Image (cartoon, rainbow, N blue to C red; front, side, top):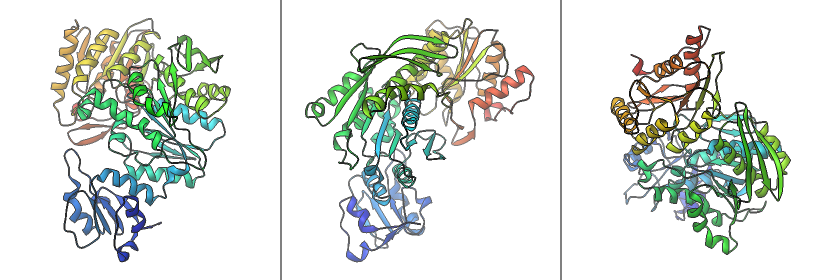
Length: 523
């Protein structure tokens, strides 16, 4: 197990210690006192409901060799460093512990409300196809060479120690480039501090996470942190890009372009744009949708080229444009390589994933869990079917409450039938959540037991949708996608929408299939 002298870590946060203390060997970094082992440095974070300073005694009992906190404390057992911002300190200490890996990688950050995972995967596939050694950290997993590491159940961006560990593992594997899916929480909470981004790309900024950010403006500003960091990226031996890739079609463009105006004028950051907008640097024209994919005409570098996507949905055209802008205009990869790489991409787990057991109607699982993503998903599947669109989804508890009604209203407008069900209710009343959604559907002319239904158990909701479906209809199950659990109370229950759909379809078709995963609402 590798170690670092304490002096190296304290130097990263501008803190001086005694000569004797400087020789202490640190074997790990954590903010979770339960994970402290002898030789660790423990950083006390203050969260919304938990203050890590309360767990300093436990960390010391578990063998912590040093403590970092923001409060004035009289700790004598081990060195204690007081800082003004423990999250900033955690990022800097984690980076230093792992040898500042981002300084030796070309790092691409992908942020936005919807489409981050798909865009990150596209960028990763294109770079890999170009023969460049690249890794990826997404909310689904970390790709490091031939290794695929799970990043958790309901994880957004992993915390700083994990991010820096993954980056160091990429270096150890001989990789030169890293693609990071970056959330607003990850940016504001400095989980990606010290990532030294070279390229930042935005997919869109829509209504989401206002339970945390409180206002849309705050949410915008959190996303903007990625782009503001570009000018601060340190000089790298492999060169610096300092490139912002913006969506010309999205409402975020005016905010981000204004945010970057001074840096662009001073030559500290370059900006490339993509979209359907005719003034964008990379454009899509003549878009054609089908059940098997999407085709469009790409305009780039004053050339027009045909592009085929196996992925469904108009928003995947936008995702593809973002990936092409990053890789072709940003990294200088040939257009043909980029187009071929995304054409070979068959699917993204839980993103417009079709499931077919021979049933006479189409069934799709998608991660859409915001009003905009739901709208775009329903618009897309409408173009894929001659029959009705039946949507199954819920809205999470203890999260942005306003979007519950917004999503029910969207579904009332763009689906023929909506089935409201459980989706991580946590400690909230599921019945109350479904009542709010039903009220919103009713306000848009919806009629219960005709255009919308309430089925609390998600497995039964999927079964109900399949029984409603007629030949040529389309059932779409939304909100969970690739996720592997659902939270009731404070407990995570194993759950995968794709498994649940296959189980329900097997019952429906009377063919062998998996068992329906258990949820407490099934009792």
